[in-house]
Image: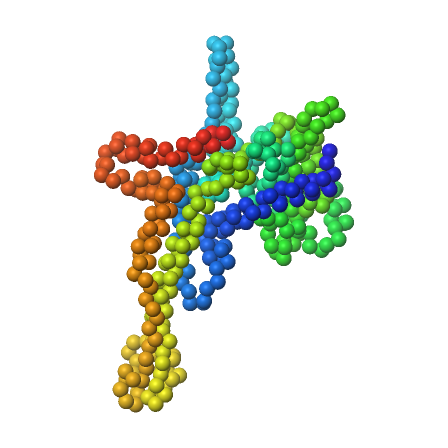
Length: 400
């Protein structure tokens, strides 16, 4: 069994390798949540118009609708006549358990994360009280595995973590006693260790990070087994279980695109992310230019006798009268800002076409553009050809 020092060392190894991917995923996730400009840390003047045509969400949602709204399952096939009734009964049990545990919904949730971040995780555990499977989807920003393994199945260890209120520890018989000891010995008044995905420390009073480690180890007989450790704030072990059954990680991973040796891989939204920024920046430039020319700086001739205070307050309003000395066109001059380049429209359209080309999500993929095809059969055939791009994703889905 591992000590807390050994577990912390495993965490440090994982985090050092996952940190660059976490940063990229956090930006993608924030962009999907309509926080593009904040996510990229852009600084603009107060008058800047900041549109958010969310092409990242557009690509993600269409891939999600195309692939992950259909649940996947496997039926047993009998190999002899004697097995037919048994296999039929097992398939019925599987279907009922599938529906009871809402497996299709959890597949959809993992697919939503995979469509955006290229990876989703589902945990399956056993509830001894209810005597049934319990499914949980894990935020990809709150999971790490052995970074030197080819995939999760071949990994030597992994960890997933959550932020929980202290009542979750005091009310759980597995944690209550050790949690009291930990809280009494904690030196810092702020209990939260800042971990990726965790809430801000200042807003996390009475919240603690629970990390669940799963580690492959060897017993005295040389047999490989999986041990489970529940750790609070990476500082103390609250609970451990030796040789969990079945002897494998209770977590499966879903990739949208093959990771190709990387920890996470690259999703379609990630591929079009830079173009999404450029597209919205073009809109921002155009709209801000129009806005500025509606409210330009004014140059007032001091000899005109114009009431400056009144003009500053009401000069942009209709049906107002101001008394000036001499010609009115000599009293006030408006600054004219440069107009945006006439090429911006073409550049925007070019970026949009590039996004569709790179992601494969265009009018034909979404079924909104069927060209000259008007028959139902012809439309279905066209969609089948267009969505061939999804075949690698379907293979990854079936592996999951």
